Picture 1 (cartoon, helix red, strand yellow):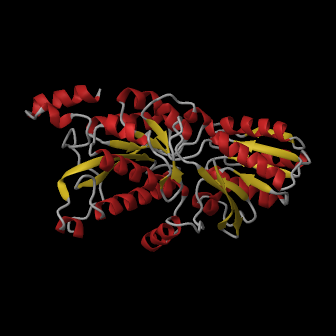
Picture 2 (cartoon, rainbow, N blue to C red):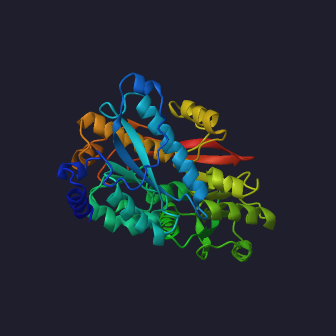
Picture 3 (cartoon, rainbow, N blue to C red):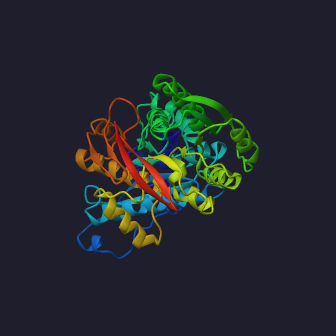
Length: 402
C-alpha cells in the first residue's frame, strides 16, 4: 500500500520517486504537520544538527479514550528519548522527529491508525503500544509493511510470532508467569485464587502459572475466574475468591482494571498475600486504586524505585521534567526509540532491512527499563522485577534475569 501511495504522490506532485521510499527520509505527504516536540532554537542547531532533513519515527498509543493516561506516559518517555538523541548528535547528524498517531486504545481503531501513519509518513521505524491484543491485531499489517516495529506487549503469542520485523521491549508473559508462580511459593501460598482478564495477557499467562504450579508441587489453584471485557464491578468475582478459602491471590489485568481489583479486595477485608502482573505496580493502577494498593506484590518490567544506573538517574530526570514518576511504558518507549537510533547510527543507514538486521545482533544493550538481547524471539528484554507496593510506592524486592 505504502509504495503505491508513494508512487501516486510522486507523479501527482512531480517529485522524485526515491523521496518516497522506506528510509525515514521525508513525509510521504505534506497535508499534515508532523507531531513533534523538537524545539526551534536549541544547542543542537548550533552544532549543525540537521532539522531540515529529519529521521521520522512513528509512535502509536492511546491519546484519547479510557487508556489515554497510558498514552501520556508513553509519549513522555518517547519525547525524552528524542531530546536525548538530538542533544547527542541525532542520527547520522540528522534530527529525530517523532510522529504520533492515536490508536484510541482499541483493537478496532489500532489497525486503521497503523495503516494511516505508515501511508502518510516515510517512517524509519515505529513504536507500538503495550496492549498485546492490539499488537496482535496489527501484526498482519506490520508483517506486510515490513517496517521495523518495537512494541511494549508481552503476550506469549507475540513471543511465538515469526514476523521478522516485530520486536518487543518486554519479557514474555511466559517468563513472567513462571516468576509469579514461583514467588507464590516464596510467599507461602498453598491454595491460590486466580482472577484474570479475557485478553491475550490473561488467557496467555494463566496457563503458564497453572503449569508451573504443577511442576513446583504444593500449590493448588482453588479458583480460576475470567472477568468480562471492560469490567468495572469486581465485587462478584472477589466474593467467589473469598468463598474459595484461598490463602493467596493472583490477579492478571491491564492498569485500569488492576486498580479496581486492588480497591475491591481492600474493601472486601480479604487480607491474604496478593500478587499481580506488571500492570499492578504501574502509576495508572496505583492512582486508580485510590491508595488501596499497599502490600500488593507485582512482577514488573520496570520500577520507579530502581536503584541501578542509568535507571536511577533517568527516573530523577523524568520526575524533574514532568513532576511525577515514570510508568513502565515511559521506560519501554524510551528504550525502543534508543534502540532504533542505535541501529541507524551503527549501520549508518535508515533502510528497514539494516535496522532489523542490527536489532537481531543486540547483546546486552543497556536501556533504562532493562538490558536487551536478541535470542531468537521478538522479546528483547532479559530482566524484570518483583516489587511490593509500600503505601503507593512500588519498592524493588528482587530482580529476575533470564
